[in-house]
Image (cartoon, rainbow, N blue to C red; front, side):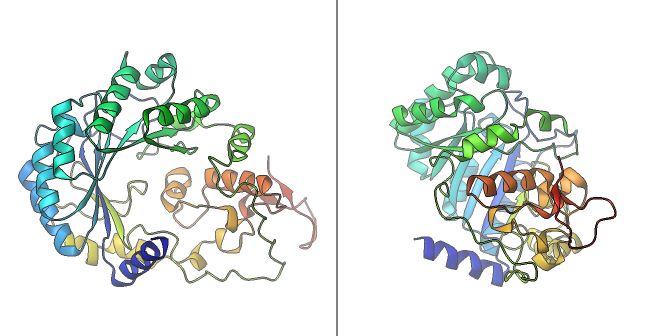
Length: 370
Protein backbone atom coordinates (compact mmCIF):
# COMPACT_ATOMS: atom_id res chain seq x y z
CA UNK A 1 0.00 0.00 0.00
CA UNK A 2 2.78 2.58 0.73
CA UNK A 3 4.17 1.91 -2.76
CA UNK A 4 0.75 2.52 -4.32
CA UNK A 5 0.29 5.72 -2.31
CA UNK A 6 3.72 6.99 -3.39
CA UNK A 7 2.97 6.13 -7.02
CA UNK A 8 -0.37 7.96 -6.81
CA UNK A 9 1.32 11.02 -5.30
CA UNK A 10 3.98 11.27 -8.01
CA UNK A 11 1.53 10.51 -10.82
CA UNK A 12 -0.92 13.18 -9.69
CA UNK A 13 1.90 15.73 -9.33
CA UNK A 14 3.14 14.97 -12.83
CA UNK A 15 -0.36 15.32 -14.30
CA UNK A 16 -1.29 18.32 -12.11
CA UNK A 17 -4.33 16.53 -10.73
CA UNK A 18 -5.73 18.01 -7.48
CA UNK A 19 -5.81 14.61 -5.83
CA UNK A 20 -6.62 15.99 -2.38
CA UNK A 21 -8.93 18.94 -1.75
CA UNK A 22 -9.67 20.48 1.65
CA UNK A 23 -12.85 22.56 1.93
CA UNK A 24 -13.89 24.59 4.95
CA UNK A 25 -17.68 24.50 4.97
CA UNK A 26 -18.09 27.20 7.60
CA UNK A 27 -16.06 29.40 9.89
CA UNK A 28 -18.75 29.28 12.59
CA UNK A 29 -17.78 27.22 15.62
CA UNK A 30 -19.21 26.27 19.00
CA UNK A 31 -15.74 26.31 20.56
CA UNK A 32 -13.25 29.17 20.89
CA UNK A 33 -9.93 27.35 20.95
CA UNK A 34 -7.02 29.52 22.05
CA UNK A 35 -4.64 28.23 19.35
CA UNK A 36 -6.97 28.33 16.33
CA UNK A 37 -5.34 29.81 13.22
CA UNK A 38 -8.58 30.41 11.30
CA UNK A 39 -9.72 33.99 10.67
CA UNK A 40 -13.43 34.79 10.54
CA UNK A 41 -14.33 37.37 7.87
CA UNK A 42 -17.43 39.44 7.27
CA UNK A 43 -18.26 37.73 3.97
CA UNK A 44 -21.05 35.31 3.04
CA UNK A 45 -20.07 31.64 3.10
CA UNK A 46 -20.59 29.38 0.09
CA UNK A 47 -24.20 28.25 -0.31
CA UNK A 48 -25.38 24.68 -0.75
CA UNK A 49 -25.76 25.19 -4.50
CA UNK A 50 -22.32 26.78 -4.81
CA UNK A 51 -20.71 23.95 -2.87
CA UNK A 52 -22.41 21.30 -4.99
CA UNK A 53 -21.18 23.02 -8.14
CA UNK A 54 -17.70 23.15 -6.64
CA UNK A 55 -17.82 19.42 -5.84
CA UNK A 56 -18.85 18.69 -9.42
CA UNK A 57 -15.91 20.78 -10.65
CA UNK A 58 -13.26 19.14 -8.46
CA UNK A 59 -14.63 15.71 -9.36
CA UNK A 60 -14.11 16.53 -13.04
CA UNK A 61 -10.59 17.70 -12.19
CA UNK A 62 -9.75 14.24 -10.80
CA UNK A 63 -9.95 14.76 -7.04
CA UNK A 64 -10.18 11.59 -4.94
CA UNK A 65 -9.59 12.66 -1.32
CA UNK A 66 -12.00 15.24 0.09
CA UNK A 67 -11.81 16.78 3.55
CA UNK A 68 -14.69 18.82 5.00
CA UNK A 69 -13.62 21.03 7.87
CA UNK A 70 -14.36 24.36 9.55
CA UNK A 71 -15.24 25.91 11.94
CA UNK A 72 -17.56 23.15 13.05
CA UNK A 73 -19.00 21.26 10.08
CA UNK A 74 -22.08 20.07 11.98
CA UNK A 75 -23.25 23.67 12.30
CA UNK A 76 -24.10 23.50 8.59
CA UNK A 77 -27.69 22.30 8.30
CA UNK A 78 -26.92 20.99 4.80
CA UNK A 79 -23.91 18.89 5.89
CA UNK A 80 -25.51 15.54 5.11
CA UNK A 81 -26.81 16.82 1.79
CA UNK A 82 -23.25 17.84 0.90
CA UNK A 83 -21.73 14.57 2.11
CA UNK A 84 -24.32 12.62 0.16
CA UNK A 85 -23.52 14.62 -2.99
CA UNK A 86 -19.78 14.05 -2.43
CA UNK A 87 -20.21 10.31 -1.99
CA UNK A 88 -22.39 10.17 -5.12
CA UNK A 89 -19.34 11.60 -6.92
CA UNK A 90 -17.20 8.81 -5.39
CA UNK A 91 -15.01 10.99 -3.20
CA UNK A 92 -13.16 9.49 -0.25
CA UNK A 93 -14.66 11.75 2.44
CA UNK A 94 -13.11 12.69 5.77
CA UNK A 95 -14.60 15.10 8.31
CA UNK A 96 -12.90 17.26 10.94
CA UNK A 97 -15.14 18.03 13.90
CA UNK A 98 -15.23 18.59 17.65
CA UNK A 99 -18.09 16.02 17.82
CA UNK A 100 -20.14 18.14 20.23
CA UNK A 101 -23.22 17.80 18.02
CA UNK A 102 -22.95 14.08 17.23
CA UNK A 103 -26.04 11.96 17.93
CA UNK A 104 -26.63 8.25 17.28
CA UNK A 105 -28.76 9.16 14.26
CA UNK A 106 -26.08 11.39 12.78
CA UNK A 107 -23.39 8.76 13.39
CA UNK A 108 -25.50 6.10 11.71
CA UNK A 109 -26.05 8.40 8.74
CA UNK A 110 -22.31 8.98 8.35
CA UNK A 111 -21.75 5.24 8.44
CA UNK A 112 -24.45 4.65 5.83
CA UNK A 113 -22.94 7.29 3.56
CA UNK A 114 -19.51 5.67 3.82
CA UNK A 115 -17.55 8.53 5.38
CA UNK A 116 -14.03 7.15 5.79
CA UNK A 117 -13.01 8.92 8.99
CA UNK A 118 -13.93 11.62 11.46
CA UNK A 119 -11.06 13.49 13.11
CA UNK A 120 -11.88 14.92 16.55
CA UNK A 121 -9.74 17.49 18.35
CA UNK A 122 -8.94 16.51 21.93
CA UNK A 123 -6.53 18.66 23.93
CA UNK A 124 -6.27 16.80 27.23
CA UNK A 125 -7.69 13.88 29.16
CA UNK A 126 -8.24 16.40 31.96
CA UNK A 127 -11.54 18.28 31.52
CA UNK A 128 -10.11 21.37 33.21
CA UNK A 129 -7.32 21.66 30.62
CA UNK A 130 -9.34 20.66 27.55
CA UNK A 131 -12.25 22.94 28.41
CA UNK A 132 -9.84 25.80 29.13
CA UNK A 133 -8.38 25.41 25.62
CA UNK A 134 -11.81 25.30 23.95
CA UNK A 135 -13.45 27.89 26.21
CA UNK A 136 -16.50 25.59 26.20
CA UNK A 137 -17.43 24.09 29.61
CA UNK A 138 -18.20 20.38 29.41
CA UNK A 139 -16.70 20.08 25.92
CA UNK A 140 -14.32 17.20 26.73
CA UNK A 141 -17.12 15.00 28.04
CA UNK A 142 -19.34 15.78 25.07
CA UNK A 143 -16.55 15.29 22.50
CA UNK A 144 -15.67 11.89 23.98
CA UNK A 145 -19.35 10.92 23.97
CA UNK A 146 -19.46 11.88 20.31
CA UNK A 147 -16.33 9.84 19.59
CA UNK A 148 -17.82 6.78 21.29
CA UNK A 149 -21.10 7.22 19.42
CA UNK A 150 -19.30 7.35 16.08
CA UNK A 151 -17.20 4.33 17.01
CA UNK A 152 -20.28 2.35 18.00
CA UNK A 153 -21.86 3.20 14.64
CA UNK A 154 -18.84 1.75 12.84
CA UNK A 155 -17.23 5.03 11.80
CA UNK A 156 -13.44 5.25 12.04
CA UNK A 157 -12.46 7.90 14.59
CA UNK A 158 -9.13 9.62 15.18
CA UNK A 159 -8.36 11.87 18.14
CA UNK A 160 -6.03 14.67 17.09
CA UNK A 161 -4.07 16.64 19.67
CA UNK A 162 -1.85 19.64 18.95
CA UNK A 163 0.83 19.81 21.61
CA UNK A 164 1.20 23.11 23.44
CA UNK A 165 2.57 24.30 26.76
CA UNK A 166 -0.72 23.61 28.49
CA UNK A 167 -0.95 19.91 27.55
CA UNK A 168 2.47 18.62 26.47
CA UNK A 169 2.92 16.73 29.72
CA UNK A 170 -0.36 14.87 29.21
CA UNK A 171 0.02 13.32 25.75
CA UNK A 172 0.47 9.82 27.19
CA UNK A 173 -2.87 10.14 28.96
CA UNK A 174 -4.51 11.16 25.68
CA UNK A 175 -2.94 8.15 23.98
CA UNK A 176 -4.28 5.93 26.78
CA UNK A 177 -7.70 7.53 26.37
CA UNK A 178 -7.69 6.66 22.65
CA UNK A 179 -6.65 3.10 23.41
CA UNK A 180 -9.48 2.67 25.90
CA UNK A 181 -11.95 4.04 23.37
CA UNK A 182 -10.53 1.81 20.66
CA UNK A 183 -9.86 4.72 18.28
CA UNK A 184 -6.84 6.16 16.49
CA UNK A 185 -4.88 9.13 17.79
CA UNK A 186 -2.27 11.55 16.51
CA UNK A 187 -0.18 14.42 17.87
CA UNK A 188 1.17 17.55 16.23
CA UNK A 189 3.85 19.59 18.04
CA UNK A 190 3.40 22.58 15.71
CA UNK A 191 1.28 25.55 16.72
CA UNK A 192 0.99 28.03 13.87
CA UNK A 193 0.39 31.73 13.58
CA UNK A 194 -3.04 32.81 12.38
CA UNK A 195 -3.57 33.04 8.63
CA UNK A 196 -3.70 36.83 8.82
CA UNK A 197 -0.22 36.95 10.36
CA UNK A 198 -1.34 37.31 13.98
CA UNK A 199 1.40 35.54 15.94
CA UNK A 200 -0.42 35.33 19.28
CA UNK A 201 -0.87 31.50 19.10
CA UNK A 202 2.92 31.09 18.74
CA UNK A 203 3.30 31.86 22.46
CA UNK A 204 1.61 28.50 23.12
CA UNK A 205 4.38 26.46 21.45
CA UNK A 206 6.27 23.94 23.53
CA UNK A 207 9.89 24.61 24.45
CA UNK A 208 12.91 22.98 22.85
CA UNK A 209 13.38 20.71 25.87
CA UNK A 210 9.72 19.68 25.84
CA UNK A 211 9.95 18.91 22.13
CA UNK A 212 13.11 16.87 22.68
CA UNK A 213 11.40 14.82 25.38
CA UNK A 214 8.40 14.17 23.13
CA UNK A 215 10.59 13.13 20.18
CA UNK A 216 12.41 10.62 22.38
CA UNK A 217 9.14 8.68 22.63
CA UNK A 218 9.03 6.13 19.77
CA UNK A 219 5.25 6.29 19.83
CA UNK A 220 5.44 9.95 18.77
CA UNK A 221 8.61 9.71 16.69
CA UNK A 222 8.93 6.49 14.65
CA UNK A 223 12.50 7.51 13.70
CA UNK A 224 13.61 7.42 17.33
CA UNK A 225 16.37 4.84 17.82
CA UNK A 226 17.17 4.53 14.13
CA UNK A 227 20.70 5.34 12.88
CA UNK A 228 21.19 9.03 12.17
CA UNK A 229 21.75 10.18 8.62
CA UNK A 230 25.41 10.67 7.72
CA UNK A 231 26.16 14.42 7.76
CA UNK A 232 26.91 15.73 4.27
CA UNK A 233 30.40 16.88 3.46
CA UNK A 234 31.22 20.58 3.02
CA UNK A 235 31.08 20.30 -0.79
CA UNK A 236 28.13 17.93 -1.04
CA UNK A 237 25.05 18.88 -3.06
CA UNK A 238 21.53 17.77 -2.25
CA UNK A 239 20.18 15.19 -4.64
CA UNK A 240 16.63 16.51 -4.51
CA UNK A 241 17.18 20.07 -5.76
CA UNK A 242 14.73 19.59 -8.62
CA UNK A 243 12.02 18.15 -6.37
CA UNK A 244 8.95 20.08 -5.25
CA UNK A 245 8.91 21.32 -1.63
CA UNK A 246 5.47 19.79 -0.97
CA UNK A 247 2.23 18.87 -2.70
CA UNK A 248 0.57 22.29 -2.27
CA UNK A 249 -0.53 23.58 -5.72
CA UNK A 250 0.72 20.36 -7.35
CA UNK A 251 -1.82 17.75 -6.22
CA UNK A 252 -3.49 19.42 -3.26
CA UNK A 253 -5.31 22.65 -2.51
CA UNK A 254 -7.64 24.36 -0.05
CA UNK A 255 -10.90 26.26 -0.54
CA UNK A 256 -12.11 28.54 2.21
CA UNK A 257 -15.68 28.85 3.40
CA UNK A 258 -15.80 32.10 1.40
CA UNK A 259 -14.69 30.46 -1.85
CA UNK A 260 -11.03 31.50 -1.93
CA UNK A 261 -8.84 28.86 -3.58
CA UNK A 262 -5.37 28.56 -2.04
CA UNK A 263 -2.48 26.13 -2.56
CA UNK A 264 -2.93 24.81 0.99
CA UNK A 265 -4.81 25.56 4.19
CA UNK A 266 -1.45 26.55 5.69
CA UNK A 267 -0.52 28.83 2.76
CA UNK A 268 -2.80 31.90 2.71
CA UNK A 269 -2.25 32.93 -0.91
CA UNK A 270 -5.62 33.57 -2.55
CA UNK A 271 -5.30 32.43 -6.15
CA UNK A 272 -8.89 33.22 -7.10
CA UNK A 273 -12.43 32.73 -5.88
CA UNK A 274 -14.66 29.92 -7.13
CA UNK A 275 -17.64 32.28 -7.02
CA UNK A 276 -16.03 34.35 -9.76
CA UNK A 277 -13.92 31.84 -11.69
CA UNK A 278 -14.36 28.09 -12.29
CA UNK A 279 -12.15 25.84 -10.18
CA UNK A 280 -10.27 24.42 -13.20
CA UNK A 281 -9.44 27.90 -14.51
CA UNK A 282 -7.89 28.92 -11.18
CA UNK A 283 -6.12 25.57 -10.69
CA UNK A 284 -4.49 25.56 -14.14
CA UNK A 285 -4.04 29.26 -14.95
CA UNK A 286 -3.94 31.46 -11.86
CA UNK A 287 -0.63 33.40 -11.81
CA UNK A 288 -0.38 32.94 -8.05
CA UNK A 289 -0.96 29.18 -8.29
CA UNK A 290 1.55 28.88 -11.13
CA UNK A 291 4.14 30.83 -9.12
CA UNK A 292 3.85 28.47 -6.17
CA UNK A 293 3.84 25.48 -8.52
CA UNK A 294 7.09 26.64 -10.14
CA UNK A 295 9.10 26.52 -6.90
CA UNK A 296 11.69 23.79 -6.52
CA UNK A 297 14.00 23.02 -3.62
CA UNK A 298 16.90 24.66 -5.44
CA UNK A 299 14.95 27.95 -5.28
CA UNK A 300 14.92 27.96 -1.46
CA UNK A 301 17.71 30.37 -0.59
CA UNK A 302 18.66 28.83 2.77
CA UNK A 303 17.06 25.39 2.85
CA UNK A 304 18.56 24.18 -0.44
CA UNK A 305 21.99 23.94 1.16
CA UNK A 306 20.91 22.95 4.68
CA UNK A 307 22.66 19.95 6.22
CA UNK A 308 19.69 19.33 8.52
CA UNK A 309 17.28 18.66 5.65
CA UNK A 310 16.99 14.91 6.47
CA UNK A 311 15.39 15.92 9.78
CA UNK A 312 13.24 18.72 8.41
CA UNK A 313 9.61 18.76 7.32
CA UNK A 314 9.68 22.34 6.04
CA UNK A 315 6.26 23.84 5.42
CA UNK A 316 6.29 26.61 2.78
CA UNK A 317 3.07 28.06 4.17
CA UNK A 318 4.54 28.14 7.65
CA UNK A 319 7.58 29.99 6.31
CA UNK A 320 5.33 32.51 4.58
CA UNK A 321 3.13 33.16 7.62
CA UNK A 322 6.09 33.36 10.02
CA UNK A 323 8.48 35.47 7.95
CA UNK A 324 6.66 36.67 4.83
CA UNK A 325 9.17 34.76 2.69
CA UNK A 326 7.82 31.82 0.69
CA UNK A 327 11.35 30.90 -0.34
CA UNK A 328 12.95 31.03 3.10
CA UNK A 329 13.10 28.78 6.15
CA UNK A 330 10.41 28.50 8.78
CA UNK A 331 11.99 29.24 12.19
CA UNK A 332 9.63 26.75 13.83
CA UNK A 333 10.50 24.01 11.34
CA UNK A 334 14.21 24.74 11.87
CA UNK A 335 13.73 24.36 15.61
CA UNK A 336 12.07 20.99 15.07
CA UNK A 337 14.83 19.91 12.66
CA UNK A 338 17.51 20.81 15.20
CA UNK A 339 15.84 18.80 17.96
CA UNK A 340 15.14 15.92 15.59
CA UNK A 341 18.83 15.79 14.67
CA UNK A 342 19.87 15.91 18.32
CA UNK A 343 17.51 13.07 19.25
CA UNK A 344 18.95 11.03 16.37
CA UNK A 345 22.50 11.72 17.56
CA UNK A 346 23.41 13.82 14.55
CA UNK A 347 25.64 16.91 14.88
CA UNK A 348 24.02 18.82 12.01
CA UNK A 349 22.54 22.26 12.61
CA UNK A 350 19.92 23.97 10.41
CA UNK A 351 21.49 26.55 8.12
CA UNK A 352 19.23 29.33 9.41
CA UNK A 353 20.57 28.79 12.93
CA UNK A 354 24.21 29.13 12.01
CA UNK A 355 26.38 32.21 12.35
CA UNK A 356 30.08 32.91 12.12
CA UNK A 357 31.96 34.82 14.79
CA UNK A 358 32.65 38.44 13.73
CA UNK A 359 35.62 38.78 11.38
CA UNK A 360 35.96 35.00 11.17
CA UNK A 361 37.21 33.46 7.92
CA UNK A 362 34.74 31.59 5.70
CA UNK A 363 35.90 28.22 7.03
CA UNK A 364 35.37 29.10 10.67
CA UNK A 365 33.24 26.81 12.81
CA UNK A 366 29.69 28.06 13.03
CA UNK A 367 27.67 28.48 16.20
CA UNK A 368 24.03 27.89 16.90
CA UNK A 369 22.04 31.07 17.24
CA UNK A 370 20.23 31.04 20.58
